[in-house]
Length: 87
Image (cartoon, rainbow, N blue to C red):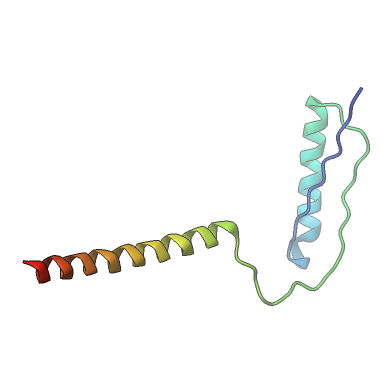
């Protein structure tokens, strides 16, 4: 039989770790009632989060959309000016 391992990584504020781990354990117990789970566990490791936040793919997409919107406005204004110049 083929098995697959599922890795999940979460970053949580240090003060909330115990509550999150408790809720995750409860969720795993509920999953175990419906599915066969082998092994596993939850590990909490402390680390310093970098102060600069990386932009998500959604934020990049929104920024690109804003750039395109600005470019289309500029193009439209240029076409209007060109048409007026021809007329």
